Image (cartoon, rainbow, N blue to C red; front, side):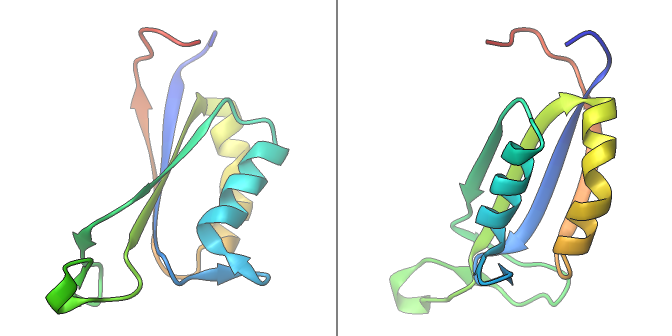
Length: 106
């Protein structure tokens, strides 16, 4: 990576959908189609968002809509080019970027 790297982080609910498929999967496919270096999806075991409703995977408090975190690290230019469509796709959630130092890649 020859320029400043950025991390794109997206927090959405597991039950969110985009055009008939899980939103997190649609985002991964969008990022792949647009040549992102790599993407990881992490399924949270517990969390809450703006609505302050706890979502958990504990058996006695079984809840749907667990938190999903999608992470992508790439150049600042690449991340910036992806944000308009990502912001359209994520109607409810959190989308943010931050500078990162890449010490090893590949």
